Image (cartoon, rainbow, N blue to C red):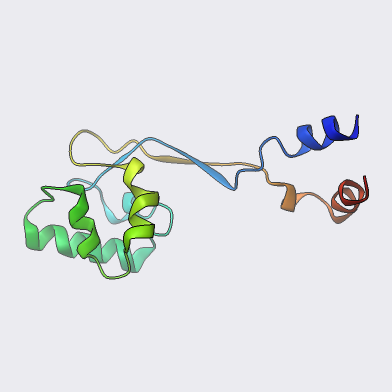
Amino acid sequence: MILCICMLLCASAVAAEHAGVVNLNDASAEQLERLPGIGPSRARAILELRARLKRFSRIEDLLRVKGIGRATFRKLRPLLTLDGPTTLSLRQATSCASLPAAARCWLASA
């Protein structure tokens, strides 16, 4: 019973779930910022690199952006494309950490 309640409360324990892709050759700074770990500064760096290259010929070219290493690239890779529309959206999910303290204490003691 307690396990069932915990599973129900934490079923959506993913911090954020992404759906769609970002086209590196057409995306705006705002669209690039939808990517996890990409803020205004990195989005600007991506746009500057795209301008220098004229367009990305390989998604791996993104590794040339300062601050995007292999670990970050591995997280981003499934969300990137070089053609087609940008369709990435960010759907916020509830996490167990956002539960009230009393509920977390109850879960911990169960």
